[in-house]
Amino acid sequence: MSSHTRPVLRRPVVLAACLSIALGTVGYLAFDPGSASATVAKQAVPASAARTGAGGANTAEVVKAANAFLATLSDEQKDAVLYDFDDEAKKTGWSNFPTPVVERNGLKLGDLTDAQDAAAMKVMEAALSKQGYEELVEIRKADDYLASLSDGEDTGDGASASPTATRTPPSGAPTDGATGGPGGPGGGGGGANFGSEWYYLSFFGQPVKTGEFTVQYGGHHAAYNITYAGNNVTMSPTLTAVEPEEFILDDKAYAPLADKRAATIGAVQSLTADELAAAEIDGSFDDLYLGPGNDGPFPTEPEGVLVSSLTKKQQAKVTAMLRTWVDDLDEKSAARLLAKYVAEYDETYIGWSGGTTIDNDQTYVRLDGPSAWIEFSNQPGASTDEIHQHTIFRDETSDYGWE
Image (tube, rainbow, N blue to C red):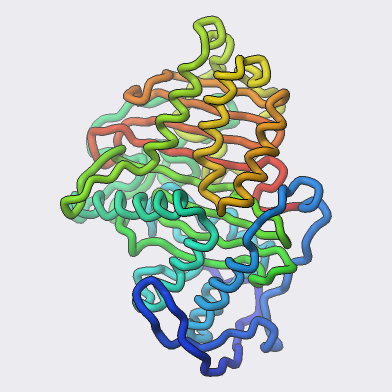
């Protein structure tokens, strides 16, 4: 990873009481974010956050968890995990490719002690709802499952060991087999690593209740960019993906993204034949249109059918779809954001391309509003013979935070 565009941190710490975490109660060092002379710059809350944010964020809880995690780290580890808020690494340090095909920001969880790893996961547990956190855990399990299939010759996300169909994205969309990744059509090269230990955590900006900062967490099939600005929060962009859809690991069955699959297909299949014809998006999609490595611009001309033109029952299906992404955030802020997005249905469109069934590896569904942007993309398996899914959630008013 390239060096950070900020001074090296050297922070004094003092011994404090014990932090109760998931793996038990361990001792930790208290972290005082204002105690050092060389610190990551605090980002002021921008006025646009008040205009487009929905409020209700549990910022204090996330800040407490973040600082508890930082308190477990050495000075060198703190330097690796903390970035200036506007560091460009924020936009390039996440992907749907395994690490190290695309190197991530921050600290690798597999390199941490059990106590540090547990404290890191407490940050995500604070930032996400119970539903969202369980989904993250299951996506990591899916990577463990892929690792269990590996013979050391993984080809990386989007690079299948068997022939796969190729779809041509519309003009302006990424053209490689896995959005934003290196290596040309088909995706990454050999030697990539799957597994839950290949996930990373970093902070952009100082975690404080009254400023702006981003929690970036991700690895292969999950990438979260959760930005706080006072009592406002955005999870834009957040990538969640899985291959295969269902699997058994250590005698336990998993089905990550099951709610997103069911709700998305339910929404698009609620359309009448005429509405389906009107909702078809021009072109076809090899992967996400605005996934890793392509932050926009968002299309200026929305495609699909206007959600406000649908029946109340159909709109409820769209809301159920939207909810499965928004409800990954903590409950109070999620409820406010969902209300905001639903209020924008007179400018929100739902569309599809390739197919509208869950077992079709060409199925692509999009929700495009003045704020909310969702993509759900099926594709042929990269490491298995089963369906491989990528999804993205963005908020056009707060991508990577507020301007």
